[in-house]
Image 1 (cartoon, rainbow, N blue to C red):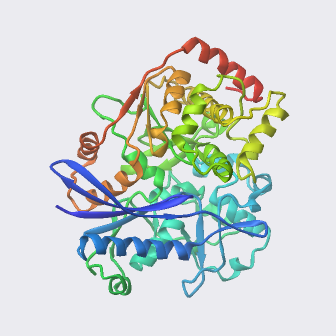
Image 2 (cartoon, one colour):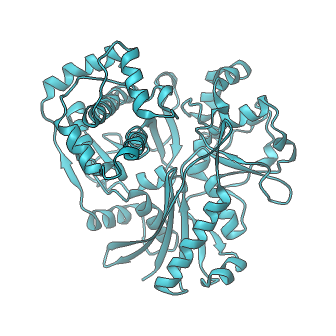
Image 3 (tube, rainbow, N blue to C red):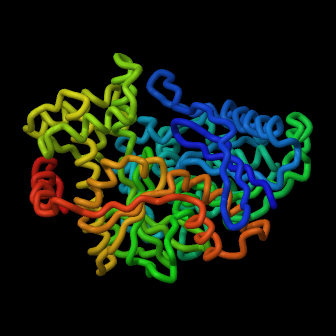
Length: 498
């Protein structure tokens, strides 16, 4: 039996989780958790990547304390789009900005003046968002950031940590595809686009497939922490959503590709389908869908929607006055609040990084000539219902692109624990929802490590292990007529179209 250590780093926290497969069942043990978040300095927001690397080392140390020095492998995943630039000494060329930094405001329009929107989409198949790596880098070129003059290497965030752990500079496939600098048809960096943006192709490293064994852990780290120097560093699907979608417990013999959709539910909601190859056409660009890399070179054809960021930020404000307000209490108050009174567009840019999310929800309702939600329950229900309706809008667009109906939705990730939103989603979509596993990202990370080391033979065995190991919940639609009627009100009151 092999032992795996997964690091799952999100925008608000990170975790170290140990995994073992015993008799076809995956056992997990979370041994370490740490905080993450952007650091505001003047009008910019940064990641403290060196502190995060220290937290990774702390997690390995916790493993040694509990399990001893022997460890087969380590795999790491993080969020997408963010990156580091290194100088000729492999040191940070400058501070590392977060995707919520305001340096990209107005940059998409300026980028389209330089390179037509259609050309960018045809090269990359990626939806347009101000948070994209391409937009961030273009903003640096446009504003003449001095660190570009000394840059020698570009690495996405998990690739940087893999470099620090293994000494190998490379780019993992699933993470690279989030950058809007990758060409999924050529299966390589979009060098023509990179050149037109004013970037240098020499910055970009070789792209490695998920499950690549990068090599043993750096000798200095092994000696510092007391871990075996034979511990392998493996690049799983380093994009957290990629790892999560790999862990969907779908039975591929019973549910055909394209008939089922997924929502990877966390700070963001990633809603889409798994396809054998990228789908790049006018409708995909019109509806702003994206093609990201999945397991076995599948395409994660999806749309990036605002997720639990909304309610997380509200809770942060509520907890300033009531530290005892729990997620269960928020869900309870939302469940008893009057239905369908207020609507917001969760993807409106006003919700990207406001000072006070509660005030922003109220301001949005006022601006759109609605009553103003006041209580915890009213605000929480507004967010839950609006998220479910936003899912419906995205699924209708997805069905139009695919020219087929979605028959079932799998919800995975931390948001799959939210019973109220799961039920609202089933009601809004009028199809069954299967929720779980909540730890999908860590599960996918660990099982891809197991694939790399041969303990898991193929994707079918991987899915079977997940079904044998974790409980899932099913939700069936009800009150359909009322939800259909209120969907039209949602579109009208938010000035959206289906």
